[in-house]
Image (cartoon, rainbow, N blue to C red; front, side):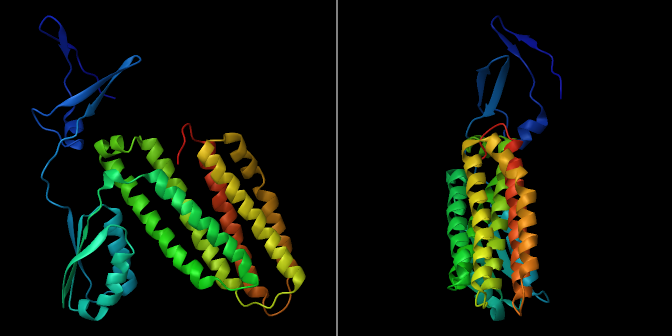
Length: 322
């Protein structure tokens, strides 16, 4: 915390100097206008909206002698860091162009604006200030609910390919959420426009992260159980376990939306019993499908851990986080 001396200015005003770091963070300069809000026992100073012609934030990625997996990680990393233009270059572009374009198109807002035999350039065309974090996370929630229900049904009818497609949509929303939150943490005027402080942003980051993990575990469960020849008892046991986790997920999201801390405590306290039930079910498994079902239950337990972490996020929050 810095201290500043109050200086008398004329007969009706006083002056306090503003830290240079705050000026730089908010991209202000001499002559710009700020807003002053009179709150209880304090004054809040906000930068006004200033339109500036800034150069787009650009990054170059050379893909030669790199695996496609590494290239994908670098592209996603650049997207999350808020780069406006991603320029992909190298002799390998021509051979990998279809896969690279798929990676880019799975990142919301990026459009390919230029392509040649050794270069693909994508630009972010979204207005980040018009994006609602709350809306995106509710969309993620709806996708996860449908994925879980179809994963439960996979012991009878395979929905894996459809679940896989929805997981791509979920990842797209999660990446966009992370991009917006990271940009807002680095840009106070953007955080102000989103009506969120840093604590709100960090909690939303945590919740989106665990939701994305729940989607991944759901997809993996569907992959493990599809096509298995289970007895009726095994099917019923699996369905009961997964349905219980689904109900806990619905409850923890209700706790998030309503900021119901007591509901979150109940979910957290039930975690141990849910884990015990899962372990007991694995002990009853027999036959060739035991390994795949054990892996599915491990994913189910991981889902339960992420649900517990969502509950703890609510327990430690003072404001609604979604």
